[in-house]
Length: 330
Image 1 (tube, helix red, strand yellow):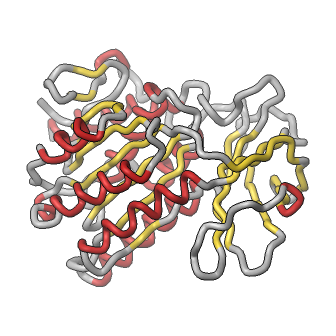
Image 2 (tube, rainbow, N blue to C red):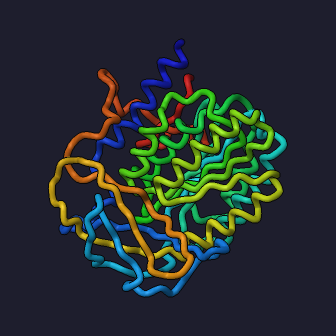
């Protein structure tokens, strides 16, 4: 009971963070909405070199005028959210290698943090561009406990919101089972992701799960990644993960940036659905499903009596990293 009560209070820190003004949804005085758009051909290959004229954007069914368009490889702020529950013991080394393959295939100026999770979430490494430092932090994992993936993703989103230096933000979550202990509901996790415009990618190693459990876990990961413009993979064996992660890096480095000023100027905090089409044969398009307008109040309100100053993530040295959350009763 004590652990559950404390977890409820500490998760409020991440929810409180969503009450703050979004950092990247609007980056100019004209309330520009910026989309990171991935385009794939029928074989799943990234499509490059398309002109602006091939793209069209609708918000709540109303066509918008594209004001920003480019395809460029820019540095991103990336969080590796890695399952460290007991069931990952035999898989963790391969997952670590795959995570490093992603970083090596990414923009050298990217900044990356590592968040391990079981029933708690712990920052194994804060933002760095040093692959050797990341490797050391990944190798130090000692799998144990259960799987609170949604709670860990909320912590990762809050760390992006509070500490990322780049406008473009992404998380990769690697997990091998159904979330069986999180407090945070899926709906508010999706909302939190869309409020800070973070792309979420997922790798689900679900082969050892019971069919019903695997189906629920897959559905949750697909919903989350689809809403944020990312993708989910479900390899049959952990050995396939090292092939997948460079694909993620390649996609991120070749996305189109599409920006528009909404015709709906109401600052009512409402959710606006986004639909992007690309006029090219046989392509598939991925971007975030929508965004929240200025104004209003997020559903993740602070619970009464919570003091945000008490929240922290325990860093590598065991000292608090200011402004983030550690989900552990100590």
